[in-house]
Amino acid sequence: MNKKPVINVRFFSHLKDKAGVDAISMEIAPNSTIADLKQQIIAAYPALDTHLTNILILINSQIAIDEDVIPDDCTVSFMTPIGGG
Image (cartoon, rainbow, N blue to C red):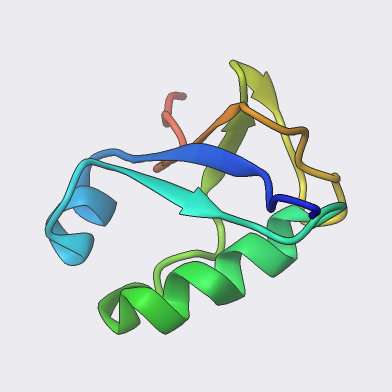
């Protein structure tokens, strides 16, 4: 029996407020990408629908993009980018 990978997902700043939680564990399909995960999160937390673009995404503290495949047993963090100037 193939078991689906489980990952930890963390939300920061206004994303935490919209989701109503700061961290969750999710089962994902093998070889899921960040884009796949976003769709899964929006299905579970519809209030995040318009808030998962133009954000900083990390996989185990490394910057990630939508096309990146999510490894098993990792932490994916969604946060607003830090501005400066």
